[in-house]
Every structure is written in structure tokens, then in C-alpha cells.
Length: 329
Image (cartoon, rainbow, N blue to C red; front, side, top):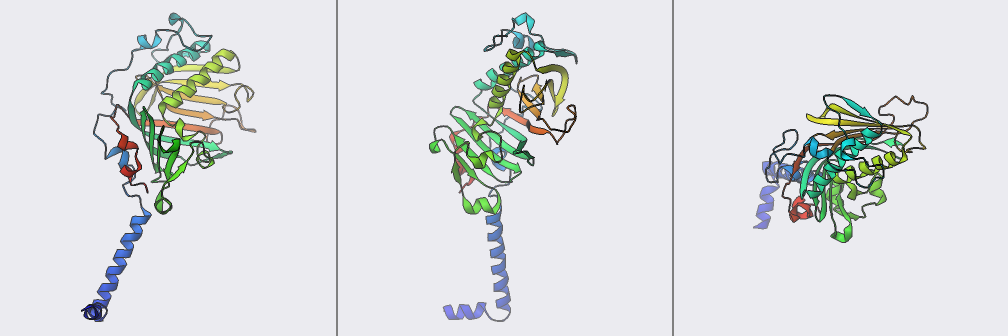
């Protein structure tokens, strides 16, 4: 019987049909191994429970009003002001100097407190960084964050398209699980790395565990407090009436006098969402010899971070931070 079947499949017209079928099967197998198992960007969005978008349309509980933001002193700084001394610009106005630094600290502190109370959120994250003197290509990432236990899921939609990363505090020996995009990731499977592994820091200025709005907000507040306590070497302005991705913002601008004051940044532009009090776009510029200090562009960009389509209280579960859900091998 087998001999008759083989003779039937490998003779005459049947042989061509058999070979054609084999070619189709091999082609399908190649594309399976060379592509992401899910449409890129689908994992954090399409599989989730639908909730209203927060950016640019807010439907969650309202953020603190400006009056609430101005209440209280700035904690952790000897130069903290009394409530009446901290004023925010209105109607497109700009404030400068120490009052601007204090206002920016107060805004971001309100955002930090708000974020710390949230169980989780999802957001579209875009970053571009300069590492080793070279400005890397932009990366776009679907990002899920849970605050307790601290958990991260990332999926690249630009850059190494299809790359995935998972971190859960207290699990996997506190290591980051990474699967590269494309056929390399499909063949190599998941790799466990320390958050500050040299392979991660070759593409990011910070360890993987620094991802998310809360960590960024903390870092900016800490830098503001250093500038305020130093009392010299930096000019700060806070302007009302700015916007990013359809969201009303305050714009904090810091300009440093010299690399001795801040070796990393010459100028920093921070767009703080007026309703949420969180930094939704940050552009930092470094020092470049032979260029006028007022010239800003790709030649001296060191960090660019942007957050869009932020959705709070997403009810993320343990399975949202397990590699089985995303078919990570």
C-alpha cells in the first residue's frame, strides 16, 4: 500500500502537486519562526480588558486642583517654601528662578504621590538616548507597570520590533526575562539578565527596573532639589500654556551654566501634565564642544522620553507578567 501511495504521489502530474505542497508548507514554517507570534503591539492592547483612555480624554477620577497642588511645603528640601510662597503661572505666564524650581517640585511631588497610590497602568512609551557618545535610534514600546509587587512588561513596536521584556520583583531570581525580536529571538528563546547587565545598559542609560513614570518623576524631583539647595549655576523657568499630544502642560526649562554644575545636562525641557502632574515628555541636552550653547538639536540630545495613551487602574493580573501569556520561549 505504501509503495502504491509513493508511486501515486511521485509520478507525472501528481509529483508537481506534491512538490508544490511541500514548498507551501516550508514557506509557512519559515514565516512562523521568523515573525512575532502575536501582531506587534497586540499583547498589551488587544488582549486587555477595555477601559476608557486617559490620554488625551480623561474619564477617571479628577486630579487634584491647582489649589490642592499648592497646599503644603516641599518635603525633603531645606529650601522648601511655605504654601503661600509657591505660586504657579497662569494664563500663559512664566515664572523664573527659585520660585519656578519650587513650583516644579511641588507639581511633580503631587504627581509622585498620585502615581504611588495607583495599582497599575499601561502606556505607550517612546525613548531615544545617547550612549557612549552615539545617539541611538528611537524605540517605541508598549509598557505595562504594576506597583505591587513591582512588575514590568515591555514589547517593542519600533527598534528591535517584537522584543519582549518581563520583570517581577521577587521572581526569577530578581532577573529580567528578555526575548529578542525576529528570528533571532524565536530561535534563542528567553534570556535571564540582571537589570543592570551590560547588554541592557548598551541600549539604555538606566537599568531595566527604572522603567515607568514613577521612577522618572522621582529622578527629576531629586535633581530639582539638588539644584534648589545649590542655589547657583542653573536658571529655571516654568511656563503655563504648553501642550503635548493634546494634553495641557506646564513647561519646566532648566539651563545649566557649565559641566561643573551638571556634567550630563546643559538644558532640560520637562512637560508636566497639568491634570495628572506627571512628566509626559522630557528632552535633555548635553554639552558639545564647538557648538553654540543655545543650539539645541540631535547633535546634543542625550535623552528623550515621551508617554502617550496612558490608562490608569488597568486591573493587571499576575498573568500579565508571565512569559507564557506572550509565548516567550
